[in-house]
Image (cartoon, rainbow, N blue to C red; front, side, top):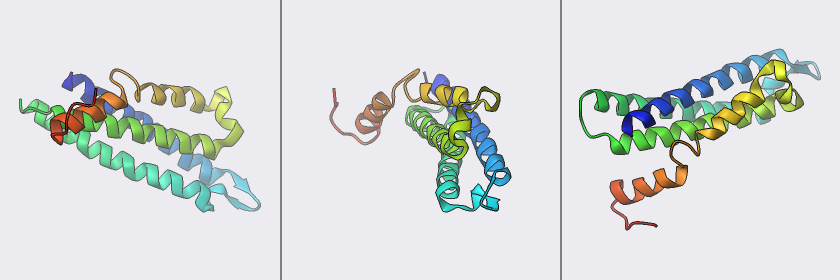
Length: 146
């Protein structure tokens, strides 16, 4: 299961990077009231915040993969990487949807389709709640929550 979680982390990070490129490119190209929409904090800040989360998720995924490759127990790292990567992809997907506005639903931009895919990894192959339960119980030593 650790390998699967690390793999999904990588896929989510890839989705997040796809969204990042789309959002940044569009926010630089789309001009409203004489300036690019990316010059507005309401567009720029959610993209920048999600980007920071992507970078953190990427580091955890790389740590989990290195531990897995070394044959070291990496349950905590694999679960944390999957959680962080799925959440970061979702947040960048949301920022991208907002950046594109109604055009996010236009088939030619492929934003809405990828957005649905990003949502999947918050649920499968293991839900966010089960990961948080694992972290609480097995990493933090808290009592079982279910």
